[in-house]
Amino acid sequence: MFCGDKATNRTDNRSLANTSNTHCMNDETLNATRRDFLRFLAASPALGMAGNALGQSLADPYAPQVIRKASDAINVFDFHEVIKTQLRNGHYIYMATGADDGGTVRANREGFKKIQLRMRRLADVRQVDTSIELFGQRYPIPVMLAPCGSQKAFHPEGELAAARAARSRGIEQMLSTVASTGVEDVSEARGRPIWFQLYADEHWESNVAMVRRAENAGCPVLVLTVDNIIRNREAVDRYRRDSNPECQVCHAPSAEVIPQKPMLAGLPDRVGNRLFMNWDFVDRLRATTSMKLLLKGIVTREDAMLAVEHGVDGVIVSNHGGRAEDSGRSTIESLPEVADAMDGRLPIILDSGVRRGTDIIKALALGADAVAIGRPYLWGLSAF
Image (tube, rainbow, N blue to C red):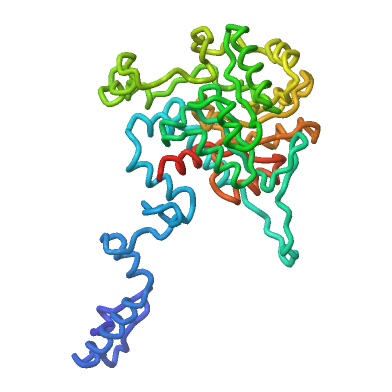
């Protein structure tokens, strides 16, 4: 509001006041105008944003919450908030972190966020069949449990609790070589034989012994992990399990708390890396077992084509949840070229970063037959 004459009120050389007249508001008019302006501000979203800046706003409505019981969860991220208050530091770091500075862990989530869905309308979706078939087995949904080791670090019953959960939903479970529980007991809890994941060893006899044990337990599928060869896990290295007092309470040999992994019982001490693996090893393993053979860790067109040439039965597009490499490339970004190379000849499963139903839809749309989840079900095991 202006009070003045032509000499003091100009905008772009145009007069705001008539030269022959001056306009001054009286106090009553000015106060009424101010009140109107303040009412406008009070109703404006801009004032709410200003309040946010001053720390006076409500909490972020999208932020995950520390829930009191499992039934309160809105999504899987709520379980993650709980375990950050529940787990020992060493166990959380082991489970949550990745190679180098965790770049690929973050990329796995960001990759899904980059992909948009084209939403079609007016399709009758009252009757939707979400079931799939893999290797002669029917599943109600295209979701399975990825192999995660040492699950008793997250729940007293570890893999047995996970098996009962898988049984309740009719989904598949893959058991890790370094599981806390043997394949026989987990298969019993699941209600039928599960899939077995193999970390290969330079002692060929050890590989054969584990394969035979899985076969004898009735396992229909053998999953060979090919990406977890040698890794640089800075966060775990900083925590230093071998010298950290919190860890040594259980992990020191003298504590006699941590038993040998059941699937490794009676076998020679394992070699710490799998640098020796190549396609000849795949051929040798293929010739050793009648189980279906999947390669876990395929992320390129070239390796997908080689997998077909070497007679495997399927692949899992995986970067080990970002734990084994720091390529910075997500599995969902790797999937299209693998699917293109497969051209429908072999089943494709995708893991790493799957957290939402829309993630599953994106994976299926880009060529996957199913997805596997890892950390989210560990969050569930750990939370309650």
